[in-house]
Image (cartoon, rainbow, N blue to C red; front, side):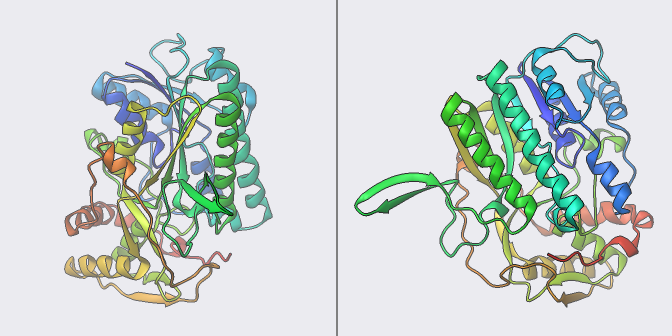
Length: 395
């Protein structure tokens, strides 16, 4: 049974990941500073339902399963807090006992400002994104260097790092032949927001740490995630993950379904030909878990493209329109002037075989999956504030 440290353990992906590892017999510690909750409050964005505090979630999890998830509340941009997670000189905000679990075998790194629109609201939010994301990654890298180079880091990257190149997107690396010589390089990156740019810098930081200090890193280039339920969230109503439906923190499929339920037009930006790779939240958990069980090697930066299928925005809107209409909602699709600077029609063909080869069993975006998300959103429809669904943040 290994010790897994989850940085950003209160978030949309962090909390489900913690439960997923815990129920499978791993010792789990989560760390968070409530950034997402505080940002939602400051910006007056929408959350579909209230969420207990992280310490309350851990208590409920223990009462329902008998398993312990230790909780540390604090800001990981503070290098001393990060280092204490490896030295054991810390106090847990919730645990069954204060005994240090030990240096983690695996660190799952979610502890970043996760929103592209947030990073471009104004200079204040751009600066926070830049400073927070890079500082947390740098703090983690140096803690690994000083205390545990054998710890395996699973960093959540994003497919948005690649942009939309007019060639196939390989899994992280590309071999280039130039003037009769060839070498392998990180696949070219061209982020379309400051958030995506910080994720590119994260990759570069870890590539430095891998080359110089033989760190062990897996970088998961994840597409937009959709869904609410996992097997663990079904255990108790209060264990559900955060669900945002606004344009700042809400992902596109979750947003479209909320818009359909409330009668708000589905907000398609521009022509709607923008194509991306998507995955179910259940598959995020599988990908992270399989990566942990099959660690990168010392001195290896291993990169996977973490998506399961691709769709254009128009294709997603049509899927949500169909299911919403069948469920009795008056669904409309509206093509808005694109607030983002991006190509609306482009080539997009990413490779995403590595995680499938590792044993991930995909959940595809079927009518049944969409119907299930609709049911949950409908259950909490009275909590939805239509005025915060769309405000038109511009790039």
